[in-house]
Length: 342
Ligand code: TTP
Ligand code: MG
Image 1 (cartoon, rainbow, N blue to C red):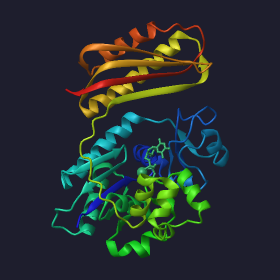
Image 2 (cartoon, helix red, strand yellow):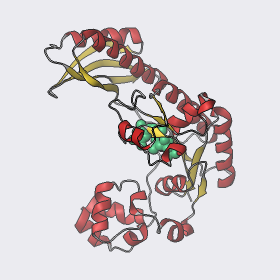
Image 3 (cartoon, helix red, strand yellow):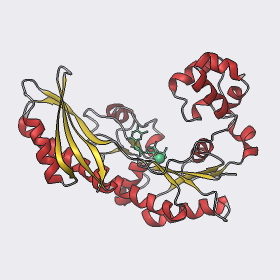
Image 4 (cartoon, helix red, strand yellow):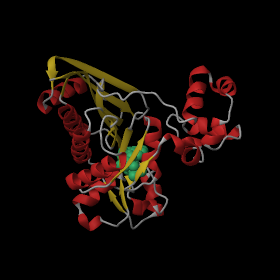
């Protein structure tokens, strides 16, 4: 029997901010955009205190401000969150070499081969992460990735949830279908229209009817997922094909100095990502979207993969020079591709 652990940090960006600024502990903290709720931008995440006001990820900052004007609004600081993320992933790697990195604040770990109990490993990981970062996470342990991810979400924040096969009927089937990975708002709505609200109700559907409604591949997936079946292996090595950063201006910009400064900032962030993953990039692309939404990209391929800010900034400016700035700019972005370990 496999034992897969899923770890997800609690209110990650907000928790990092509260940790480095202790005076924010216990306060409604909202991280998003430039941290100014009177300007364009969305909430990246909100502390649990702020969530009580109905604030959630992807909500416009302005809406969040209306819900909680006394909230502390902060700018996104990817450099710091990536640094903390790296520490967390290193702790996880100490427990098993088989890890699938799922993004800035989550990962799967295969602990099948450990002689220790699941509970013991789960508690130990949570304690080690807390020691190393001062932050809490939620952990789920189950026979596969699908169930482990559901489990980590069941007792957030600071949760540890262990699901075994015999729990599927009692603890998984009562949950709404949207808890299954791969079931988004569209499928959720279609299932609701068919009278299927819970995972258990989905499990009762004959395979043929799901296939006729959703096609062979997705219909079969839904059928298996509802039974708690998921054979997917962990993908332990993920080669990013490109890394990018872009920003939409609050007001459309015609000042070249502002564009240049923004480009320098974006290069700095994307180069930090690159260095952290141990990659160099051969191709630098700059994207400019004008106020009429026409979008131009210019690329430059280097002789050898580069990972220094200096080289990449120069390449990005070369690209910029080849765009005719006849209109105001709405968005500017930088992408690094042709990535290689260096
Ligand atoms: P999540 O793990 O989805 O959220 P979270 O860690 O803030 O809160 P939870 O305790 O519910 O896990 O996402 C991790 C980080 O990714 C989050 O802190 C900020 C970022 N993020 C965005 O920038 N935009 C989004 O829409 C979401 C969902 C997350
Ligand atoms: Mg999280």
